[in-house]
Amino acid sequence: MKTDTLLIRTPEGVVFSQQLAGPATRFLAWGIDLGCIGVVMIILNLITLLFVLLSPGLGEAFDILGYFVISIGYGIACEWLWRGQTVGKRVLHIRVVDAEGLRLQFNQIVTRNLLRAVDALPGMYFLGGLVCWFNGKCQRLGDIAANTVVIRQPRLTEPDIDQLLPAKYNSLRLYPHLAARLRQRVSPGEAAAALQSLLRRDEFEAIPRVELFSELARHFRAKVDFPAEALDGITDEQYIRNIVDVVYRARK
Amino acid sequence: MIIDLQRFLSQERPCWAELENLLNRLEADPDQKMSLEQVRHFHLLYERTSSALAKITTFSSEPETRRYLESLVARAYGEIHETRARGHRLSLSNWFFHQLPQTFRRHLRAFWLSLAITVLGCAFGGLAIALDPGSKPVLMPFPHLLQDPAKRVADEENASTDKYAGIKTTFSADLMTHNIKVAIFALASGMTFGLGTICLLFYNGVMLGAVAVDYIRAGQATFLFGWLLPHGVIEIPAIIIAGQGGLVLAGALIGWGRRVPLAVRMREVSRDLVTLIFGFGLMLMWAGFIEAFLSQYHEPVIPYAFKITFGLVELALLILYLAKSGSTQKLGVETPPA
Image 1 (cartoon, rainbow over the protein chains, first blue to last red):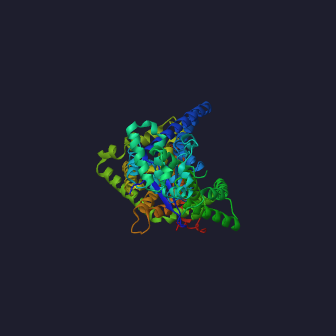
Image 2 (cartoon, each protein chain N blue to C red; image 1 turned 45 degrees about the vertical axis):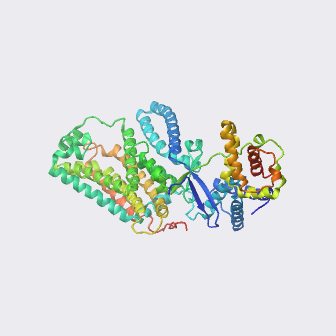
Image 3 (cartoon, each protein chain N blue to C red; image 1 turned 90 degrees about the horizontal axis):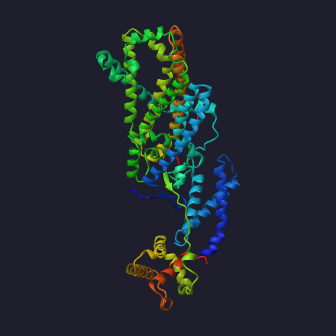
């Protein structure tokens, strides 16, 4: 089954996840890398000019060998030196890793890069893209042979809760045991949905906004039953603010 | 489970930081050796961080901490559970005299199969050109091979100028890169369940057989051997070894009745494939050099006897090397991870 997350269970029973990069992101990264190879080739051509002054034959041979080495060695060298990343992959925050979470080895890097010859068939990585599209771990043929996957490594930034939630009185905090239970029962997805609805509240029309926060409030009220006095006189939107405050500012 | 998150984080953070530092050091210097005590401490840190990850997973308020811990556990897991031989510092002489020939011999059946497909192609190409000389343009799509062999030999032997003067280096580089690309493609085509590799080996054989029969039928066998042997005895085996790699890859992909997962099968052959790739790459560099600087010069510049002897000596050394080199030292067998 195709999924966008690779779950690895360690023998200790701990599960960690890796978000898989899709074909489109990988194709873009390849485009950037192609540009980088082009730049390196321009530099190589300039160096070749120096060789041509010494011997035209030597200069041309240097150019041919240089192009060959760069076009084949670029991916191998970058992924080896940067632990699974090329310039394109760095820009798009993706990385090659071992499919079983083990250390990425030189053999794997060489294999996946040389098998591009088949993945690129009949042109523009059609075969590789097709295999990647249908493969459960989003692997192209080179990845299958090398037992590698490409994962996303997004730069995580914590939302600026302080700006969103100015230090106002939060009636829910008067009940720390219930607040703790709320933190325990709210899933990361639910917390993110509540936070996003607050962050994007100004993008909604008035009525859908009221309806959205009403539905969210109903959902979160079912999680933990706070006493009526904690909820007196606060709107659904304010209730969601208080919920997000409790969930995200747990350390305060 | 309700825990005091703030206390928990402040207590555990130093342990995570220590693990992160240790991992950074290990990744920067993979050859670093740890004492038993250090290994135990490393394992303790890993287990404690894993346990923290299991606890923090239930907290929606800590997505960043969870991600950070996942990344730490993933890195430490890779270091602790890796059972493949660590990539020790490359010793070129050990690789050349031991690892490459041993790897070649470990997959000898695939080599014989690759050779058989090429020979089959040769037989087909030779038979086709013998029975239907008009098929030459189809079987040998190279302009310089299409002319009458006797005329070509006369032209080459009577040439008053060196047609490769000033371009030998370029020609050599061209040959090397082209042949290495073809060989890589032959190996990589193993991922088409071997079909691509088989087609390429067969087609290569067809061309070779057709050229050989064409020259022999024209009474130019001496020229043929003098022209092909110096570089061909290295170039053709290199392509066959690339085919060997392709068939090994196809074998791992198909699995032939083995009840082990695909990932394990691929892991088993991965190192050998890379060794074969660098092996045929080296051979094709040599062949490209010889083809540009020796093979293209014929009598009276270089006597055929010398060229043929040179080729036969190369072939004998290659066979000796692949059959015997490194036979006294056994490589550590790579064990797949549990």
